[in-house]
Length: 188
Image 1 (cartoon, rainbow, N blue to C red):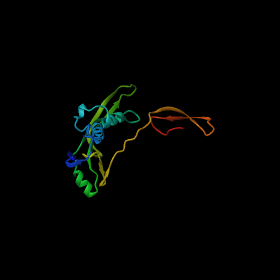
Image 2: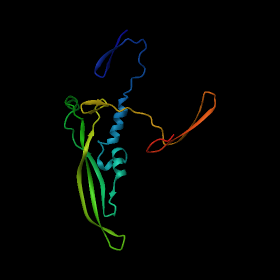
Image 3: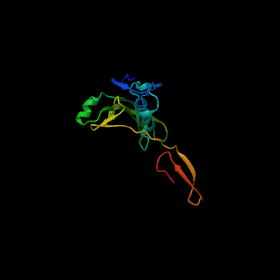
Image 4: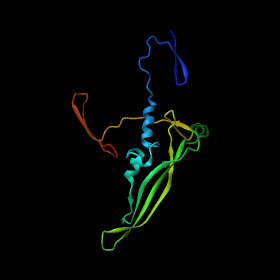
């Protein structure tokens, strides 16, 4: 017996003898939620967690000059509105993105001669356009130069030392080691 189902706005007919016990999960939702947590767009700047894009900025800043007379501090970041919809970007061969604006504070110091003490000479705070941040569509894809792109997740081995044993044709043991650093090339 055919059973009509409503799935994603389309009527589908199932000729299965066994009825569905568990619904099909939305696997794209995991990536959408992950990207939203990375950007933290719906969180006010002062309440953002120190992870994702916020974590990247806080790990880089403050930047000080070589003689400690000035420092550049990160205050917050904000996103503008997209110029075009996802459909318009797809049709016109454009990237579906929003402008990323970062508020930075430059602190200039006066050093006291003969001591470590220093005082603030000048503070300037300014919003700086940093670039365009691609947006994820409701389908979990990105539109880059009019082409839909997806992120393919992959498993990455944890940093550390790995030792393994294999056997050759004569059943003699072969030992190997691998060093996987936090950053950089793997050593084998």
